Length: 461
Ligand SMILES: Cc1cc2nc3c(=O)[nH]c(=O)nc-3n(C[C@H](O)[C@H](O)[C@H](O)COP(=O)(O)O)c2cc1C
Image 1 (cartoon, rainbow, N blue to C red):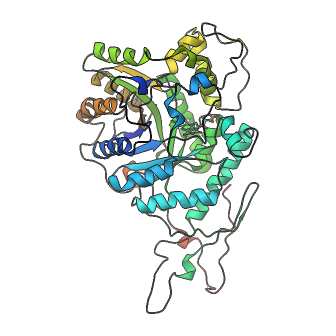
Image 2: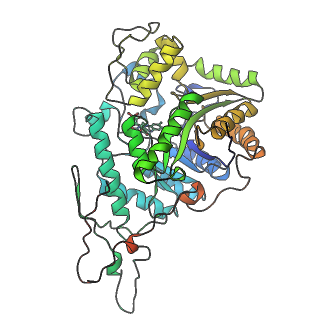
Image 3: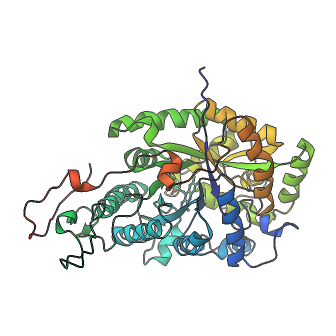
């Protein structure tokens, strides 16, 4: 097979204690509270200076279970609104991209378009939006609803949602705001475009009350890997996050998703595929294994069943920790791709629920590598060179120590192998990722009637 070598993209999946479920209990974890702003500043400034293209904040609209034994042992019951947090962090950083999650099921496009355009302006072009459809019914309960809409309807809404957001980001041509004191003209009327959208889910007139942002369109990330999720990505996204735990499946996912781009007249370079990697780094193999074990030993058995049930979208009622999964699994209305991965792994390796918990409590179904910097770099190199990934979303098990191990040990190894540049990439997030800058609408709409409000009804197929 032809191998390819090129610079990889690197994101940092920022969960304040680290990605391992028990990270907050570790002796090296800080005792500062989860909301302590300085903890976030320390991590993002390290990412900023150490070759990460972006930091990424996940989000759910609430506490995603009512299982008290689990949630009372979990650190994720206190977390910031991601856009607010990244806006506060932006001035502490200069280069790193800032990617926040926002749900298309529980927002309106106008608000999301405005928030991300704002973040893009105030960070000089470093904003990214992780488009999610929300997969947990407790979010619905916080947003005046009894349950999630059906999976397929969530994705249909997401498609229209993203299209409207992009249309709103095109409300103004570059340099529309002339602020000409002499003539008294604040903006150039022919450079304004009123979306005037009416669709199945949304009715949005526009324009956005914020000028076109430095990236034109902030970077769009998509993180659902079901058929519908892949279709949304192929049609609309610049970057895909995905959970893949083995090379064969990751290569298959990569090939199919890249091929799907043709349906939307897009090329392979238009979409960057970034699986997650959960790296447990040691100076020796033994040290890495000891580090992993020190986290695993802190997992509480009470968390096992609700953790697997919630993340895997699995009904485990009536089962005990040492049971196997039932032979028949009901289709989930939550995350279809994660359920598929959990069930396939459990069946393949004959895992009990307890063993599934031990397997997924750190990496959550993403690639897990426990070893030296060379072992981790080997794995990254293999995935990138055999077309399983264009880069990785790094999930440090424990923050800040695992991130420091990654920067001190793995990053120099990646640079030595020519997989990572030795200069920090600068510019907008699009430029850092090698993505196209979307042109403004001046070439599409040329008004010859300057006194009329320019209504441009438009919806992408
Ligand atoms: C790296 C990664 C990050 C994700 N972050 C979020 C998140 O912040 N909020 C959320 O609701 N879903 C998140 N998801 C879940 C997906 O966006 C998606 O909603 C879910 O997997 C259901 O998609 P599917 O049925 O298409 O597989 C994430 C998934 C991945 C792989």
